[in-house]
Length: 279
Ligand SMILES: [Mg+2]
Image (cartoon, rainbow, N blue to C red; front, side, top):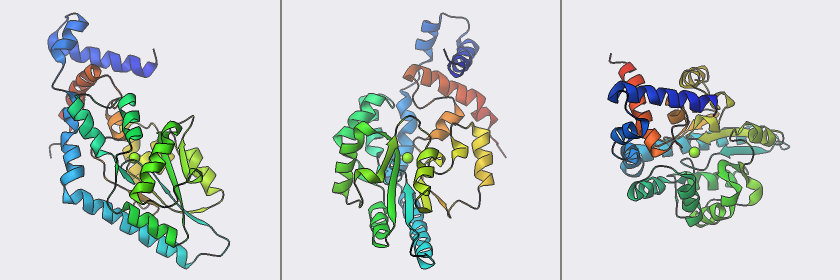
């Protein structure tokens, strides 16, 4: 058992003891299970699908990216090749339908259901994305789709993106997850041959290694340290449904078993929400 899992189990255990006393763990868990943890995501998904603010934020992000391309193209020397690096999920591709599917099926994120979603190739595009990437291509900018989708999902991902109208959808433009989820190595490889105009993502690990597997306080400090990069080299998209911010709140939260997730949620409430600023 890894140290992380041990700590997770220990804190979860403390929560059980604090609330239900010294009952057998299995009994305690069944008493602790809250309404399906997937319900936590509902407002985030509604925001993504229905809030005009969500759409406005996406258009705003892509407008900034367009300005970045214009600026870079103006002073560009002939031998310099320009590129944009973009994440896929919740940056170029809208998977809110996956969250709805999970909700209807009564479970949270699972690798199996995610792989099925990718294979079904039914995702939509994020507002403004196709227009922006077509603009980038028109301006001679190379697009790199840097994603932690697996290589097994590449063919279906490309098929869907072609249907949605994304340009430069060929294998050489995709840098998917291989041995590590960190995107730093892939970014460095691209930067050897291209001048990176901007990096686009909904998760701060899409832009900077400072956020790789970082706890909450490190993430917040890094976001502050990089304050001049946001809306400049780094362009952020809204995602209120999931992200590394969840795992930073509570270790490996996103992929936790639903029962552990319910207990973890209690711990988040106990440890975090009570500690929120009330002003
Ligand atoms: Mg993403």
